[in-house]
Length: 401
Image (cartoon, rainbow, N blue to C red; front, side):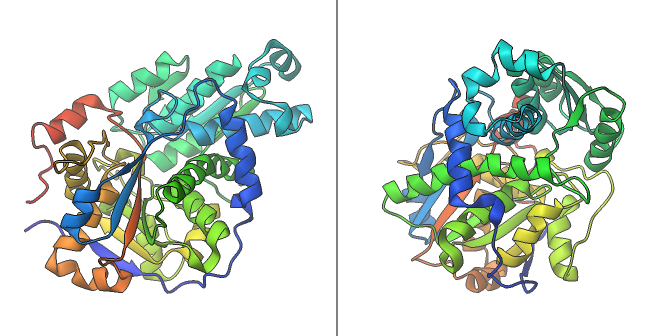
């Protein structure tokens, strides 16, 4: 018997709260900034019509972020935008005055002086911050929690960062990064979570993720389809809150139903939904979904998710493993997607909801049926290639136990 999927429909808030961080005007500015990068290209939105037919829905679309900036994950969108916003504030400039060519030039570097950007990460966010700091000619320091893949550490170090794996979980690594930044002149924390007193930069990071949401929205329109449902994975919740906030601002009460997906051992949003208010979880949080192994919700994104999301789901690791295999070996006629452990959990969950009798109640509560169009975000590729092969090739973490 496989470990069970847990779910809780949201009864905490009403879908009437504005999401000022994610307005169309703000996100248009964000996308314009990212478009100034020579590495920019819209990532693919992959349609899976044969899988949709098999699962009994009208459409399945997957935003493939393995193609983002050559970094194999979406996270660079948030870190780069937040760092640019910080620099704009220090220099008293407008973002429109700081496209990539100007931002990475000697004049900006000379005016700004030496800055050290600090962050904590399991891999993708830290690599994005390190890459952006390298483009800017600045320093970066990255702390990783125990259990982080050495390959991800090496990739961060290859971007010029000082990076180490620490003997602590993700949330404690965040606190370490903050403390360390206080002891360095011009030390700045670029962290993709928020807490009381630290909200501005995480808000900018969420806005940075808006480029991905805007692209997906436009790609869906071009395909002549409007999503009725989104399955959004959550670590601290910044991605989920950003996408949810964008679609809430864009479509109001007509936005897609949103399901927030987490691993069992780090299901702080699910536990918050069960308790009816903000909760945290603690411990080692060892899961194959390393990018989602976070025990403390981002306070900014939580305010969006508690009002706008429809359901919170806590998943065992086999759900992500199943999604990885389905992405890598699709039905004939559907395109393969290189989707990593945290990127594939939404697809694995969708298949479970539509095919398992014990989840019929969830299927009915969400209204997932033959008229449904589901939008998913594969947020990373094989960012740990050996682990990816262990799961997809060699059967580590069976899809059914």
